[in-house]
Image (tube, rainbow, N blue to C red; front, side):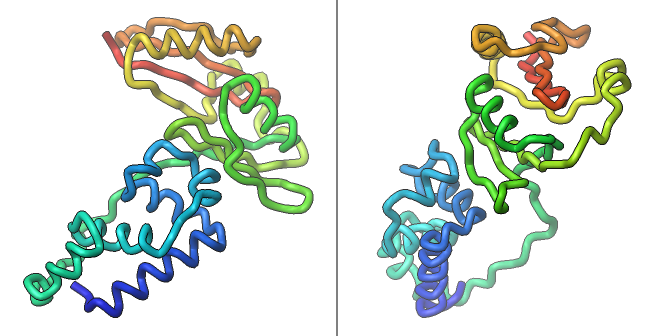
Amino acid sequence: MPNLENLKKQAKLILRWHRERHYPVAAQIRGLIPRFLIMPDSEILAANFKLGDAQEMVARQHGFESWQALKAGLPATSRRVKLPPSKATIICAEPQLLVTDIKRACKFFHEKLGFSLEFTYGDPPYYAQMGRDAARLNLRCVEGPVIDSTIRDREELLSATMTVATVDEIKLLFLEFHSAGVSFHQTLKKQPWGAKNFIVKDPDGNLLSFAGPAN
């Protein structure tokens, strides 16, 4: 384990990243500090975050419940060698959707599908991220369609697939979208393997599958 001075530097670095609104640190904060668990990235970066919070993160990263517990445990663990991981772990995936109008796309995902804007980039914006619960969709502006719409619809070339936890939730989500006036490429349907899903078409023709588990 690193010495206490190095751990203090780590905490200060995390605090600086938060102040600079460095988006990758938001996911780390959410994963380590319980009070941030259900917050989207934008709310985490706007929240009150102090050095003590950063120190708590560092402590939890090293298996301690608090900074005080870490300091107390340092003498007993200072000789332990932390082995590097044997393989990398992928913790999430963020599909990228190609759109021709960032403002229109963000409005659709917010008003029709209940997503929140996480951030935009560029002046004028040509990139954005929308989030709902644990799902993240990245929107990239292009000058025109890059996939033939006829082929995409015929072959059902999906741009993203999102899942819910239970059979009841997929029905609730379908009804929510239906009430919002969403355009469906496929309404709620039970597949041969037992799962239920539906497919939404966004204003740019992207096909988005929403699926629930099999009974």
